[in-house]
Image (cartoon, rainbow, N blue to C red):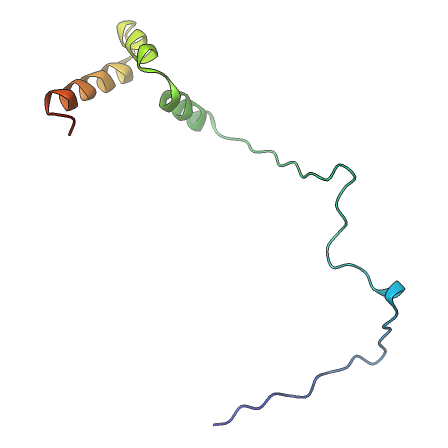
Length: 85
């Protein structure tokens, strides 16, 4: 089987003057920057807050009854007792 290229197809009327050409993409806005808005769920916000809190905050939350903070401190204590594994 042989595949050969076909001849280029020309449109019936083609205007090649520069003034008639339009850009393929829109021109950038006058500010030159694009702003995107991102919304994250409450669960994602809570996960981000938990991941970015300090060990002092975790200890304080554990002392005030936060079960998740208590589990995290217990897990870290076990890791320290096992040599950091």
